[in-house]
Length: 232
Length: 232
DNA sequence: GGTGAGCTGTCGGCTTGCTGTCGACAGGGA
DNA sequence: TCCCTGTCGACAGCAAGCCGACAGCTCACC
Image 1 (tube, rainbow over the protein chains, first blue to last red):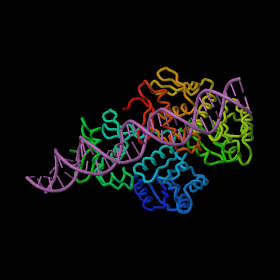
Image 2 (image 1 turned 30 degrees about the vertical axis):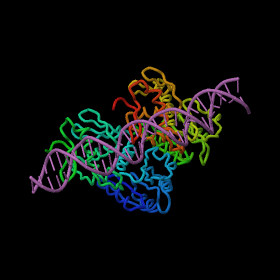
Image 3 (image 1 turned 180 degrees about the horizontal axis):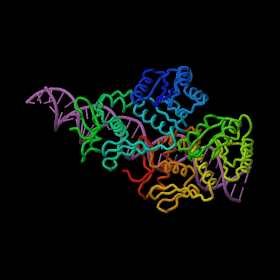
Image 4 (image 1 turned 60 degrees about the vertical axis):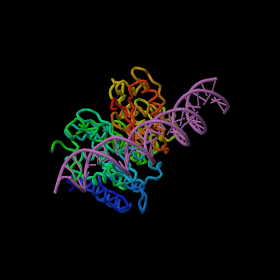
């Protein structure tokens, strides 16, 4: 009965906003995502849903995330887990969480960052041979493991923000993305400044990647940006 | 039906965390790993799984590790075993047991250390002719058997931590690794300190290996470190 | 056992360079 | 043409990373 091949994701967070945010983005990627707001609910949903991967907030109203993890593991499942934790959380308790296939992220995070980690963990946990994941648009390539970005074979050095923004644009290429979408995915979800940061970073990317070549980063006036070949 | 060429690993430990930790890291390496929490379970799983190598905790709820080992041997299997033992355990009893390809490790261990031993044991036990395993990145080489590290032919003297950290970076080269990943693989799994140890050791490695040469150890600001050639 | 050497981890000051704001200017569209 | 949107240089604040100094610990050697 489980012929559905979509990735099954369970998001456990007591803040419905956050849980739904993550679930929505995952569904947009074609995943099958459900949410739970408490540890108890999480365990019962996990039991029948059999997720491929779990996003787990460490702060839950009933019992803490580690307990949930223990119970998940006790139930015999080896499902990989990506933890969410508050900024000031006792960092030492997190020690050791990235070991194995698991990973963690500090709130507030950027959704694209979370999705990237989920994909990475999944890639590791499913199957032995894992191939490097490389995004390509014409002669522009981005390797998600080595973070290497090349234009026509020439390596480019990008800052973290530039890298994230480019990855998001390439991943969604050839779709046009609004500045709001970009802001919401690449910046932390509580980022306040509604300035021209996006434009600024795009201009840096252009200088580093498009100058001297056929432009691949295009402005769609009044709408947003897109990475693709030709078209005007 | 056993056309799968992956290494088959059986991890026997009553602490699910530890067993899963080891299994997950092994799977990440492309191995086929299963776990068992008791001696009885271990024997039945071994009987049908036919592991190539076994990780065995000496402290089990039903009977002790030595008994498990005896029964494994009685069953006619010569499978190599790597023991796990608590800090204060009688190391000498183990010493006598590590005949043939066997080995042991004291808890808490660093995962990379365990993986290195498993690989070494495997290499020894499979066939007589075993070639030394040497990691190379440009003119930097690391011999996992002799622990010899050379830069441009010149031998370098590394401390144990420096060696482990370098090996992990080289093994995963050219991927970029976060400080958290490095900490979780190279340090013991219960290491609490979230300090700047990684940066410190990297700075030592740089002084010993990169000074006066084309740098191979690179900082990826906001992300982590990587060992590879060129790029900036 | 006692002693010393070397390794490991902490602290803190300094440096580097990334990020976001501002503002002047350019260019497209009606 | 004129306005509005987008471009991009300059700059300041600040976080990340680097590394010297030191202290505790382990372990080898006597």
